[in-house]
Image 1 (cartoon, rainbow, N blue to C red):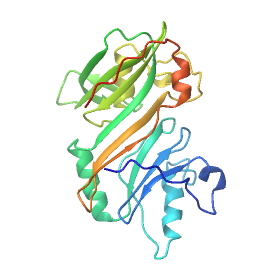
Image 2: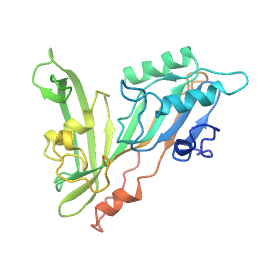
Image 3: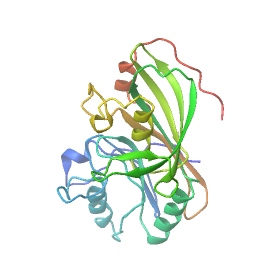
Image 4: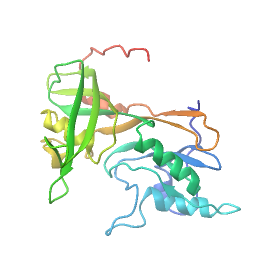
Length: 245
């Protein structure tokens, strides 16, 4: 198991981005980084250069010998947290298979609007997209794909709740849609009904990423702390004890 954080990513280009992107782990097969909010994972029609993929691609190409970079999964622009990229095609296939069969573990923290009553809960539904690419639940398994989200309350205040969110599946906007449909949109998520944006970003952060190393088969577990800004948004003193796992 590897949880060690390495130094900040360093590369002579893209200095402003370099200072915000943390290199957590790297070997000949994978790179794990911590993405800041506001930075795309991969290119879009409107933005091709200011992305995690572009920054890391330039970095691995500058090595001797140069390497390639392959996208395994992604985080939305306004979400921060841990991402893994592959450096070989075989590593990409092995990692993507783990995400596909849900053996790769992902946990997040989120601050939502409203006081979530239940300490723990599991949300199950079939998710699909509408014409404007917004994800929503449908009762039909023929129209949507099964999505399972586990939540646990970490802290409550009168109007907000800090949640731990664990994905059993990985559908597009799964966390955002599931929490909003329960009446608890993530702070800053205007698309899914949030009425406030105190951090000028989505209050969603990937705190844990686990997978079997595509080369050695070793279980790799990486953790990122909950942002202090999230904790400040929820002022209640009561914090639930994290159960042993």
